[in-house]
Image (cartoon, rainbow, N blue to C red; front, side):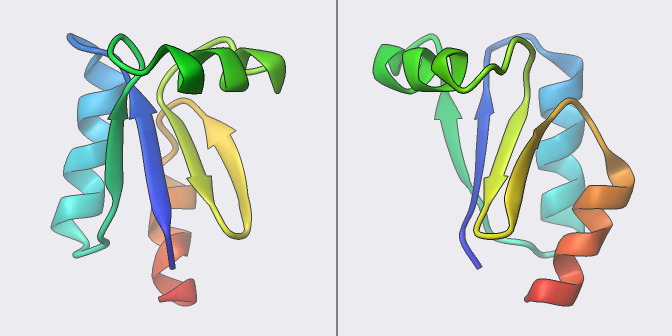
Length: 76
């Protein structure tokens, strides 16, 4: 499953999300929204206003959500 974590520097929720994915052994791609303005504009257009934004084949969410992160194991 493809997992993308959109984040920004110095974001504790972003760091926690990426740390939990790593602990669970879930591969992900990290996108720094301060470096990728196109991705930032796309997420703003979709209505996201906070980071991290986690995008998977089964949907997306914003904010740190341990339960949703753990649920990704069932799709692996």
